[in-house]
Amino acid sequence: MSENSNIAERFTKVLTPNYRAPAIAIIRGEGCKLYDAEGREYLDMMGGIATVVLGHCHPRIVSALENQAHLLWHTSNLFASTPQIELAEILVARSFADRVFFANSGAEANEAALKLARLYHREHGRDRYEIIAFEGGFHGRTLFTVSATGTPAYWKGFEPMVPGVHHAPFGDAEAVRALCSERTAAIIIEPIQGESGVRPAPAGFLAELREIADENGCLLIVDEVQTGMGRTGTFFAHEPSGVTPDIVTVAKALGNGIPIGAMLTREKVAKVLGPGTHGSTFGGNPLAAACAKAVMDELFSGGILESSREVGLFLGAQLEAMQERLSEDKVVDVRGIGHLRAVELPVPAAPIIDRCRERGLLVIGAGERNIRLAPPLVIRPEEVEAGIEILEEAIRAD
Ligand SMILES: Cc1ncc(COP(=O)(O)O)c(C=O)c1O
Image (cartoon, rainbow, N blue to C red):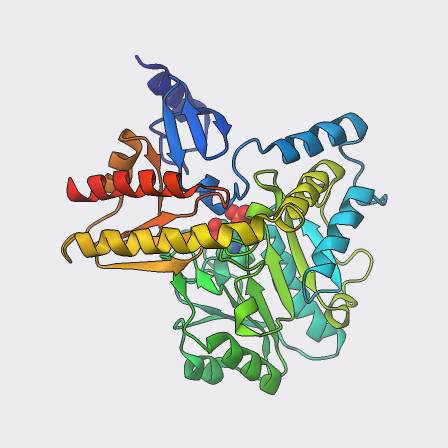
């Protein structure tokens, strides 16, 4: 039995079966390259699901991790920790926000956002608890965030869902208006729906939601867990819209793979989150915060955010050129911005993703018929070309 199969067999014996049996075990990573248990090299164009924004084992993050590992790992949030404060200071300086709550994942950051939206109104004497989310949206797997997730398949077996969550068609402002009432606490939206197929919100939609939220008196939460941290060419994907949200959530790329999430908000909203109202044992602990601070430093002072823009455009152009070379019965659409892209197929994506892997390229699905590309921002143009060549071969072979 091969080493990969051997590890996969052990995986299936002891881990809960919610993750499909993996075809390979990844042992090592460097930049945009990964190596499996048999030493085979892969080009990573999925970045640990839009997470490894600076590539694997980036020296600056490794060094931040090592330094902090010798200093202090964890004390709980009963004590102040300087890495956490420094990280929050950078996030505040680089965004609309005045305050940051740290969590360990995207779901936890969103859970905090949704709970805060309810608390905000309750503290002002308003019985607003309803949430308007979108069909096709994805916000996590805790009960509140999966309730906000707009794909009923994720709810199955976990009902009853958190009450008061409504889903509008993505991009339909009139439907949102119709769902808004004196019970609405917040609207939550991904600027680009990642999991359901890399679907950008229509132009002007975020601005319309801001207007609706202001008219109604509810909050606007923008979930940037997948799209934030420079993935679409700006620090947050919503920035080009000119809209200022009330709450923004990030996770995934914030730690480049170290588990950390954050909820960013304005003073006016944050102040209702008084002592004891919410919390987390690990959220923003020194080890995770030191790594995330190094990620922020590399993005901004290291110049990655700017230098990656051109490669993001190149990736889009390469995908469009591939679409032109292939007929419509092979590729239905290519979509996305920067380093978050999808190729929509007329057939299920899974067999093509498997073929890519067999040819040394790692990509991921998004919905049944999309191949999603979310490579590290540090991917080089020649790696993009090599990846698209494999992708095209794998699509043609179908
Ligand atoms: C937009 C969005 N929100 C929330 C989440 C949940 O994040 P996590 O898996 O870290 O809980 C995800 C994960 O894919 C996501 O894409």
